[in-house]
Amino acid sequence: MIREEELEIAIKVVIVGNGGVGKSSMIQRYCKGIYTKDYKKTIGVDFLERMIDIDGEDVRIMLWDTAGQEEFDAITKAYYRGAQACVITFSTTDRNSFEAVKDWKKKVENECGEIPTVLVQNKIDLIEQSIVTFEETELLAKNLGVRLFQTSVKEDLNVSNVFRFLATKCHEIIKQQYNNVLSQNTPTISQFNPTFHSKNSGTIVLTRPLRKSKRKSMLKKCGWI
Ligand SMILES: Nc1nc2c(ncn2[C@@H]2O[C@H](COP(=O)(O)OP(=O)(O)OP(=O)(O)O)[C@@H](O)[C@H]2O)c(=O)[nH]1
Ligand SMILES: [Mg+2]
Image: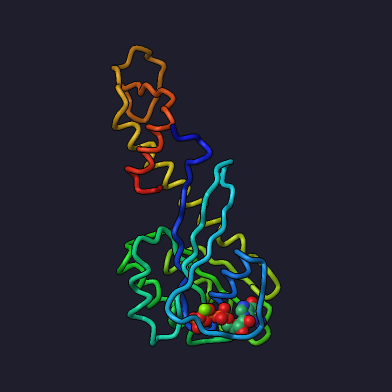
C-alpha cells in the first residue's frame, strides 16, 4: 500500500550559461545557503537538489549545474535530456555571456524542445560596471519569450524566486497532464441539467476520488515520478 506522503513530484532543471556567470554559486546558494568568492570552474556536470512546497505539495527540484566553458559542450549536452525547466544565466559584467544567451537557448531546445525557461541576469550587485542596459536585457527576454530575473547570488537577492517560479510553472503543467489522463479514463454521461456549464459542453464529467495506488500509477504514466 502506497501512502500519500510517499508520492512525490520531481522536477529536473538545467542551469546553463557561459563560464563564470555564477551558475554553481546560484545552485550552492539555493541548496546549501552558502556563497564562495573563489571561482572554481565546473568540470562537466554537477548536481544538487532541494525540496520546496508548492500549493501544499512537496516538490523536489533537481538542479543540474552544467559547465559553461566551451570545452565541456559535448559532455554537458547529454545531461539536458529530460529537463523540464531551464535557467539561462548571464553576468552583468560580461558582455560575451549576454551575447551567448540565444545560443544557450537553442542548445537546450535542441535536446528538450520548448520547456519553461527563465533568463537570469546575475551579479546585479555590480550594476555600476554593467555592460548591458536594462532595455537591452528586457528586449532580449521579450524576444526569447521568457521571464527575466535579476539576481545577486552574492547578496542573496531574488535567487529563490527563480526556482519557485519555475517549479510553480512545472507543477501546473504536471497537474494539467494528470487531469488530462484522468479525464480520458473517466465515464461521462450526456447532459441532463440544462444550467450546467462545462468545457466539454453537453457532457458532464463524473469525477471520483482516485485511489492512492491509482494516483501513483497516473503520475507514473505522465512520467512525473
Ligand atoms: N559579485 C558577484 N560575484 C558573483 C556572483 N555570483 C557568483 N559570483 C562569482 O563569480 C565567480 C564564478 O562563479 P561560478 O558560480 O563558479 O560560475 P559558473 O557559472 O558556475 O562557471 P562555470 O562552472 O565555469 O561554468 C565566482 O568567483 C563567484 O564568487 C554575484 O552575484 N556577484
Ligand atoms: Mg560552475
